[in-house]
Image (cartoon, rainbow, N blue to C red):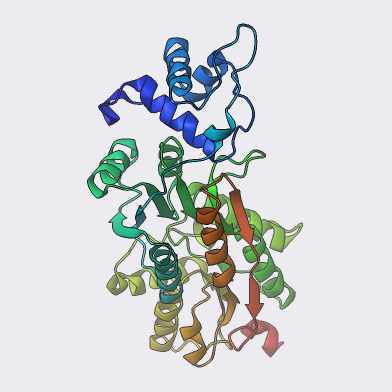
Length: 363
C-alpha cells in the first residue's frame, strides 16, 4: 500500500479495505489476527491493529476480547450507503468491435436504470506499468464509488484489487483462485481456441495463425494452451510465428501486419478474435486474390451480429450478452459481493469460411 495515494492515514485506508471485504462476503463471522492481516495487506502489525480499532469504533467489529478472534457485527455486513457514481475504464489502444461496444452500453444502461450516474475513460493499460496512483486519481477526479474495468492487464488487476471501492471486471488478465478475491465475468479462451483448432486440425490444417490482438500475459498463455490442446500430442508451431504480436492499433497499418504474418508463416487457416480484425483480414485476402475458404479458412471469435451480413458469413462464436448483463445486475442488487470470475459459455455458428486446405483438396 502506498501512502502517497491518499491523504487519509494508512490505518484508515486499511480499515476501508477490510470493511469492503467484509461487506463483499470475504469474511462473514470473524477476522484473521492482526498479524495475518498485516502480512496479507503488506503493512506493519501496528497499522493493522490500529485499523481493527477503527473498525470497532465504526461499529463493524465487536469489542476486543483477549485471546479471541475479532468478531464481525451482523450490522457490519451491510453498507447503509448505496453507491451512485460508476466509473468505467476501457483500453485506449484496443479497437473495440460493435459487439464489445454493445456490451459496454448495456453495462452502463443497467447502472443508469438503477438510478446511478456513470463516467467512462480510456486508458493505455500497456503504458502504465504501476497504475495504482493513476487509478486513485481517476477515482478521485470522477467521484467514483464503483469501478468497472474492461479487460485490464495484470498490473491494473492487482492495483484495482487493493481499492476500497467495489470493482467489477469485464474479462482481463485475471488468474483463477480457489477463494474469490474479485468479481466479474469472462469467457474461457482455452476452450474457444482448443475447439477451433481441433476442428481445423480434423480438416487437415497444420499451419494455423492466431494473431496476438493485444493479449495480456495470461490470455496469451491461455491461447497457446488452447492451441496445444487442439493439436493433441503433436507439437504446435513456433509461437513467435503462429501467434505473432498485433501491435498496430490503427486500421491503416493492419495490411502491413497481414503481409508480414503471411510471408513469415504461410498459414492455411486463421483464427481472429475481433470483428475489425476479421474485416481487415478479409480485405487483405481480396486484394491478394486469396479465396476464402478455398485458399484460407477463417474462424472469428467475435459475437458481432453484423458479421451475418458478410459474404461468405464467417464461422463465429456467440457471446451470451444477456447472461453477462444479468450477472452484473445481480452483483449490484446483492451489494457488490466477491463472486469470483464467472466463466460464460460460448457457442459456435458454422457458416461458410472453413474448409479443407487447398493442397489436400487437390490430392
